[in-house]
Image 1 (tube, one colour):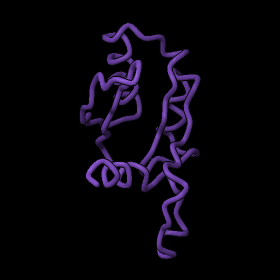
Image 2: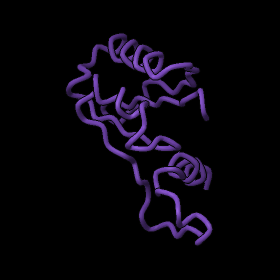
Image 3: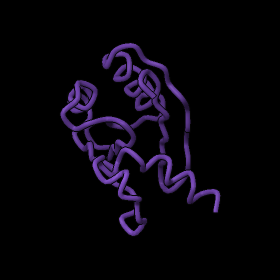
Image 4: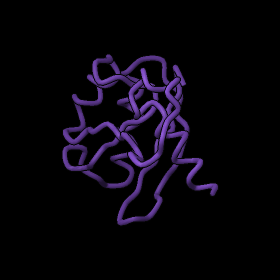
Length: 106
C-alpha cells in the first residue's frame, strides 16, 4: 500500500501484534515502529526487522528504517515457490506478504 503498512511483531515465536499503520511520511512510519518497539520493551538496535512488499532497498522509506533499526533485511519469502514469468521483472520481496497469507490459508 502506498501510505499504509502492516506490521507484525513476533517475540519468542509468539505473535505479539499485527496491525495496519497509515503514514504520510517515512518519519511517520519510524515513529509508529519505534512506538511499538518501546511498548513491548524491545531494543531497536537488536531486533531483527524484515521488510516485504513494495519497498525498494534504494527507497526513502528503507533509508529511514536504517536510521533506527540496525538489522533490516529484505524478506524474499519462500524460494521454493515458483512465480509466473510475468512477475520475473520484479523483486521476490514484492510478493512475500501475499504469498505468506496464501500459505497460512492452505
